[in-house]
Image (cartoon, rainbow, N blue to C red; front, side):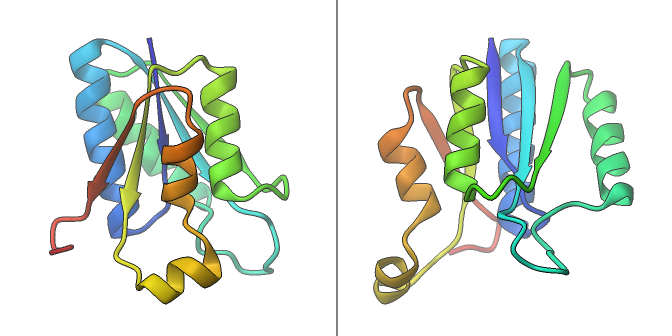
Length: 133
């Protein structure tokens, strides 16, 4: 079994990662962490740097997980990349973090979470960061 988690270094990304670790431990599943960006900025806070990558590796190793970290700047948006990895890995679950957005914000910018929920071929677990209410 494989679980895919969309990860950004943010409260929502941390909440998704924490829940994905719990789900992977519970199911004794492989965890694939997807950290992606279109690569359209010189400084991109969506991508983890080498130090953050190492810390993430340590966290997943100490959780006793079989894991893979996928960092990508292939020009795809996050939804496309998460869905691509989930399909390639034949994932049984995708875990994503949610953030609050206004109706106008969703209309203008689209919603990564909505696209993943609508287009995924497997169940999607969405979580909010601790203070999201």
